Image (tube, rainbow, N blue to C red; front, side, top):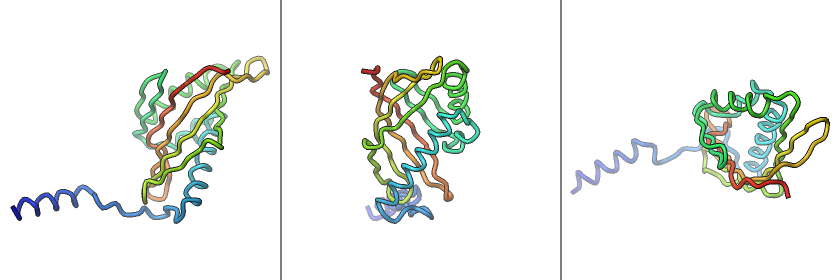
Length: 163
């Protein structure tokens, strides 16, 4: 029995059950919130301006994107291809995502990441006129590795038309 207990304990310690804080992880909830909200704003500024090179830097290579209407996508290359085609592909139409900042909630993943949830609105500009086209909820999982924050999981759901 002692051998079984020792074997289980060794297995658990070997898979990183005791997570160490990543260097540079914010020391307070307020600092974490400021960091994650600023990163989210920068990531979607790049998205809104179709700066795909910059946008790419905000995601892990194996990012997973879940969309309740558009389905599942894995990998930063596929995400950038889709953004180029669907968001940035029509020069006569511009799509803009606007986060509703007073709906934000930031939850720590102690020492290695954070979860950001909230609502976002989507606008389309055609013929020089912008109009609200819909709203949805989002969840972003941000991970800190080697001093860099990146989105690893993106969920966009509960899409509704403009009301």
